[in-house]
Image 1 (cartoon, helix red, strand yellow):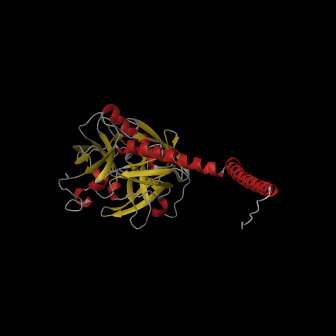
Image 2 (tube, rainbow, N blue to C red; image 1 turned 135 degrees about the horizontal axis):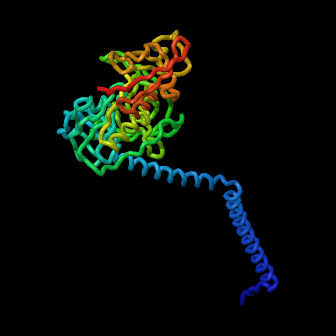
Amino acid sequence: MFEYKRRPSKVKKVILTAILIIVVTLITIFLYDMYINIDVYSNEQVSNSGATRLSYNEQENQVQNNKSDSNVLENVVKCVVGISKIKNTGSSIFLNNSTEDLGLGTGMIVSSKGYILTNWHVAGNKYSSCYVTLENGSVYSGTVTWADSDLDLAIVKISATNLEVVTLGDSDNIKLGEQTYAIGNPIGVEFQRTVTSGIISGIDRTIKIDDENGTSYMEDLIQTDATINPGNSGGPLINSKGEVIGINSVKIENAEGIGFAIPINIVKPIIESFNTNDSFEEANIGIFAYDKNVIPYLNSSLKFDSGIYVAQITKNGPSYNSGLKEGDIITKIDDIAINKMSELRRYIYTKKVGDEVKLTILRNNREYNIQIKLGKKV
């Protein structure tokens, strides 16, 4: 007996095939449509919002800026030197030769002929000796060829030539918030040429300094929040272009994030003279005067709008018998208005011993003109 097996009808096969084709087609259309929508959304997001592209460009710009800053800093670091009063013979600053033992500070090369700018408290008085370490490790004996304790500046000469030099900027045109970098030796020889960054946080600052020599004032300083430690003294404060705008000098020890630098413009005439003549004969007017910002420390009842206050006249100096008196307000020199002691110094630095200058002064609200023949500073 045979079992009978029914064959599926041709109609049923056709129907099943048609259904399968329809399902596959619908799935294909769905997937294709989803892909198109995703692609279109992505393109619109990039092209219309601009946010993704802007963020990328900003990152690229940041990378380029960082590379540019690094190149600038590397060029300046080559011109930064270490200065010490005794020769370093130890292997580590953590052993026998601390910063205090070495008297370590910083300087910058300002002439290819071997002139180096630093602080007076780092290098010492004129004709004193120190040791200078270049970026390549070479050590030279240096001699102080010019120094001013009031400015806390000095220039040291070493027997080296064809040196790379720093680029000097214009400290008269600096702005609050401008990017700055301080370079120096903050702890000692093992941390030499350390770079710290910050901004210009104050201009024309005056600070009072009390030490074993008494009370003094430093005026017209640049204030920065770039970290400045004792070993940074004499090193450059530079702008984003790599131009020196100041010489790192002092730090307020009881306040965090406050450092000061001496404006570079005040010493430019001296650097130029050494570059040109290998010498600088400093003319002297024989007075000491204060900016109006210092007056509240000295006499709160004394007020004036412009000029500088004559606090002291050197006995037997150029101004001693000129008719100038202590308490006078100098408003002009050779008809050029002055409001800072640094401006008077800078102008005198451009003059020669024996030159005459005209001072315009205020005394008891009356204006006078006084002629003074400049002498030689000893």
